[in-house]
Length: 257
Image 1 (cartoon, helix red, strand yellow):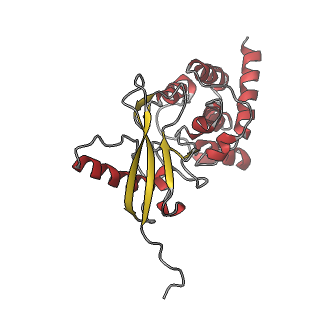
Image 2 (tube, one colour):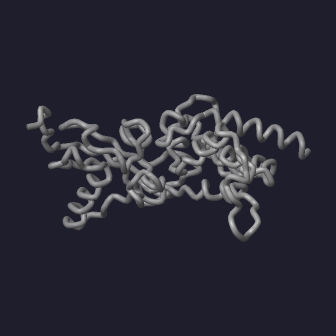
Image 3 (cartoon, one colour):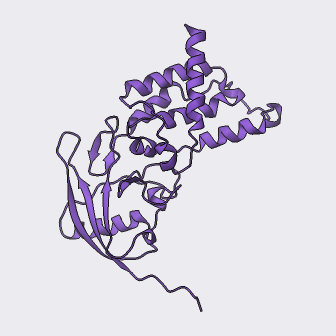
């Protein structure tokens, strides 16, 4: 017999941001949600709320999701003022209702950034990230059979840091958490993952110049070293990549001028 008492279902007060589109004013709307199991994921709780609303003939809450396994980066919500919610290194879809208590009021908002305009309710347009990737987040390779991995010696430290940077899922939590709405952590991770590997050397200089330039064009704010981005990142991407990006950019600017 288990020594741990089972946590009973909860009743929650939800304050959810509702907004028709980017040009319309938005507001918080309150909802009561009963019979919330602590074993539910946060998105499952919203699914149940939407099912109830649809049956009542109301417009359901729009929110993004896809894999629901913490991989795709779609499920971006600000929960009680924290990107992805209160649990560190966890995406919204992997957040469970056991993190909350019976009777809690939960405030749910979209990412707040000029470069992430609201599409509807909790859904924002994150295509600015796609354009940053298109500006330089690629490598030139010869077509044909893949080269044997052992034929390209890479120091373990470089390989580990590149893999850590490549773990970025592009969710945008770094932007949502930053007081300046900066995309520097995202951009630096994408630059780092190639700058550290031999395959990324062909476009190394152009990549830094073009991706940073595109980031600025999208209207993201500047980095002020608050560190909120690292704290909010569900994959715990290190802000050390920002230092590497600045070095890559400065070096490229000096040698291509």
